[in-house]
Image 1 (cartoon, rainbow, N blue to C red):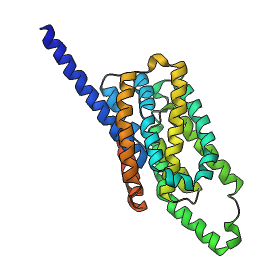
Image 2: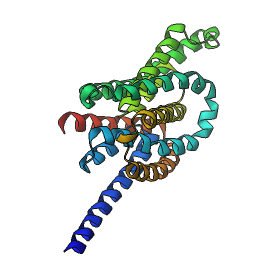
Image 3: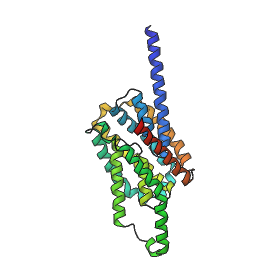
Image 4: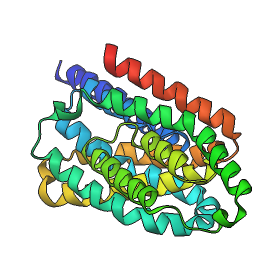
Length: 272
C-alpha cells in the first residue's frame, strides 16, 4: 500500500511538473511574440496548488530565461534601436524594483480590478499606433525641417513616465506588461512594430531581472525553486521558438495576434 501511494504521488508530481514545463514553454513563446505569457503560467501554478504569492514570485523568476532567449533572438532589431533602448531601460528598471517591493507590502488583489482595464488600454494603443505614426509621417513630409528635430519634450517625458509606470506594474504582477509596452511605443515613437517588439523584449526582461534580485534578497522563502527550474527550461525554449516565429510575422498579422490574445486575456480575467 505504501508503494502504491508513493507511485501515485510520483505520478501526480510528474503530471504537475509536465504542466508547469508546458506552461513555461507557452508563456515564454507568447511573451516574445506578444507579451502576455504570465496569463498562461500564473493560473497554472495556482491550479497546481501554489499560493498566489509563491506562484507570482516563482513565475516572475522562471520566465526570465524566456525573456533572455527572446531578446537575443531579436538582437538585430535591438541593435538598430540601441539609442531608444538605452534611454528607456533605466526607467523600466526603476519601475520594476518599485513594483517588486510593492508586491511584498500590498495584497495580491490590489491590482486585480485594474489589470483588465490596463490590458484594454494597451490594446487600444496597439491598434491606434499605425494611425498616429502615419499622421506624424504626413506632418514630417509636409514640413521636412521637422523630421530632423528631436521628439517634443512632452512626448519624451510621457514615454519615460509611461515606461516607468508599466515597469512598476511588471515588477508587481506583469500580466500583459509587454502589450502595454508595445502600445506605448506604438503611440509615442515612429518605430516599426518589429523594432518595438525588440525593445519591448529587452525592457520586460530587465524588469523581470531586477524583480528577481529583489525577491531573492527579501523574499527568499516565497520562492519555489523546483517550479522556477521547470518554468525556466520551458520558457527559455519557448523564447527561442517565439523569436523565430515573431520576427517572420507581417506587422498586420502580429498586431492582430496581439489584439486577439489580449482580448482573450481580458475575457479570462473578467469572467473566469
